[in-house]
Image (cartoon, rainbow, N blue to C red):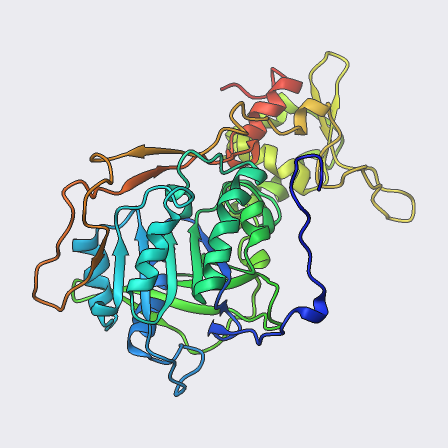
Length: 428
């Protein structure tokens, strides 16, 4: 026993019976494991899960495995954001789902506290193969979703339940607004990503507003690294969801990489060329450059962004103002390298990100429409044309998510920081 009085438990691996890994969706969503589906709002995360539910309920092939049917199974869903009457049911019908095999659990609000409710519904649904919690943060009760230990106390029993019942457990989650490695973009603690065996990220195709991609962020159980694409389009007044047949080779890290904010590329290039010409004959006071840029039709923020793009230097003039110049060129034509070629040399305050006061503020839940103590524990979608039954107090919980933002999220923060170094340079 240890100091807490707990008796040690162990097993020799020779006594462990090997089992073959099973997949709900081969190489993508494993059975008996946790999987995350993450993405920004309005990118179709819920549509993806409904499409999966439809395929499972009919035993239909997965979009990347045409002609290969799967076993017919049941689905349990928890949803805090979509209405079952005007959103979930109509979309399931449009996707061709057998709604008798899809159950919506309505009485659960805290998955850590009420996990036995989830177990009960999984047992009731015939051959349940998929459980969806959308979004996960809305069903975490009072847990601080930014603390690893708290999150793991909820996810560990969930993972054990998924393994026991041999169901694929999919947690739908939002992204934060930080510009960082994709692995850290999932809202809340990194424990969510660490506990999941696979993580898929959905994102918009900037070249096609109807197209989205589902790309791989993490997969501990498969060597496959390809993703898929899908379209969400409006046809004859109806929203239509369709998968594309061709795989997507882009990774989630590539799909979620920070995108430049501010002026379009052509405008930035024109500003950079103009600024390069202005500074070609020697250093200039920043306030003079900004005034000339305004007369030439360029905004202050555009010119301030152009300076680091051309490798410009930001020094202090004799009168205390800011002095801008191009990097010196040696006799052999090589531009002298700055310590950080992407940022001008200036006071530390110029480039340090502003730290938000609420960086560690947890996500909160606000109840809408009363408690969840009604007798109706879950809702099964009946055949088309019949009435849905719903508990009187079955209103969902609304997820009030706290986004973790940095100064890089605000295009004006660059100006604000530069102002600290040179108050005369740019007024607000």
